[in-house]
Length: 196
Ligand code: AMP
Image (tube, rainbow, N blue to C red; front, top):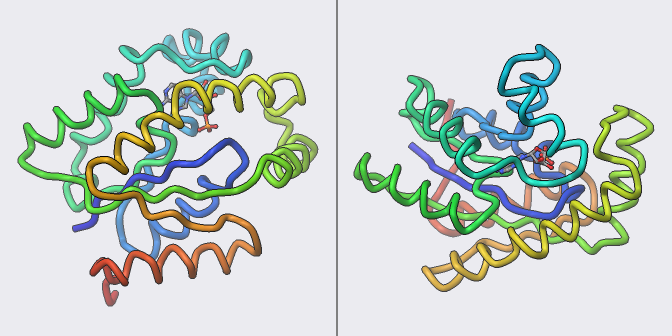
C-alpha cells in the first residue's frame, strides 16, 4: 500500500514517470490533467467547464477539481494506494486532500518533486507540442502555466517540506535514469518496489 504525490513544473516529465511508477508499485496513477482531457474529448459537462481554463493555462477551480479527486480516490482500485500526478496544485487542494486522508485514517507515504530547469522543461513542452498537439503547449500558454505553477503550486512544496520532507529528484537525463532515481530514493526511505 503506497500513497504518493508527484509534483513538478509543466514539462518536468510527471506524466511519463507516473505511468512507470504506477506499474512498479502496482498502484493507479491518477492524473487530474488526463481526467480533464478525456472529459474535454468526450464533451462531458465537466469537459465543457474545464476546457476554457485549460486552454488558457489556468487552473480549473478548486471546488470542481476537489470533487473530482474525492470521487476518484473513493474508487476500489485506489484503496490499495495511489499516485497522484498534478494534484494537489494549490494550498486549498492540499487542505482538501488532508481532510480526505484524515477521514480515511491514512496518510501520504511520500511527496516526490521532479526538479528541472526552465530551459529543459520548455524544450520538452515544445517537442510535445509538435508530437501531441496539446492546445495548452503553445509558447504563450506555456509561459502562463509556468507562472501559475510558481504562484499557486510552488508554495505547496514548502508546505510539505515543513511537514517532514519532499523527495527531490533531478529530472534531467533519460526517462529510465529519472525512474531509477525515484525508485532508489523511495527505497532509501523504506518504500521498496513490491515483488510482483
Ligand atoms: P497537466 O496535465 O497536469 O499539465 O494539466 C493540464 C491542465 O489541466 C492544467 O493546466 C489545468 O488547467 C488543469 N488541471 C490539471 N490538474 C489540475 C488541478 N489539480 N487543479 C486545477 N487544474 C488542474
